[in-house]
Image 1 (tube, helix red, strand yellow):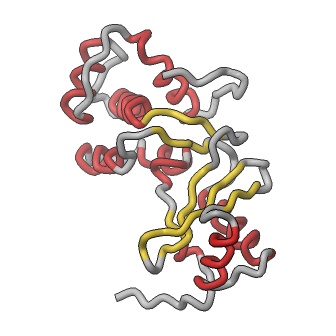
Image 2 (cartoon, rainbow, N blue to C red; image 1 turned 90 degrees about the vertical axis):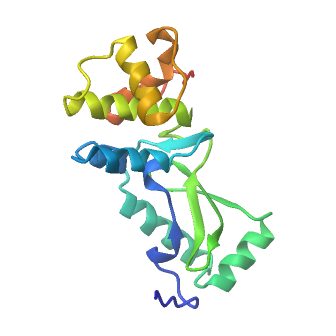
Length: 197
């Protein structure tokens, strides 16, 4: 059983779905050898829109800067964190060293009470649908691991159906957001380009 000291904040108190919100973990998971394990990671993305951070701050550095920011506000425990959120309509936004915006809310798990995710319309962040994210990452994974050869429409639709439970697309040009996400994962995204689904 995990024993949590609610009188002191640590990285262990942060609830952050890195696969859903941070390019670093997605890049790492592309090396996963087990197909089932990889697609289980994709399931954590959910079904709604999400904000995805692709900036240069590592997951560890994001956590450290969040804790430093909270300490600068005098937040050093569960109680003081709860009080901060109560004063701010139950969420708190902040900017990190790369100017990216992040949102803090109350987590639903006792020991992980700092719920963290990127802010909407923040630098180094895009807002995308879960289906576009899942499709892009699955396509990259399967081509990289030799289980899909190129991005032909039939292969993409078979993968969307078999592994993601998603409906087929009529043509590959319907996947504009997927192309952008594929570019982001490999670090070649231009922020000036709008994100379409």
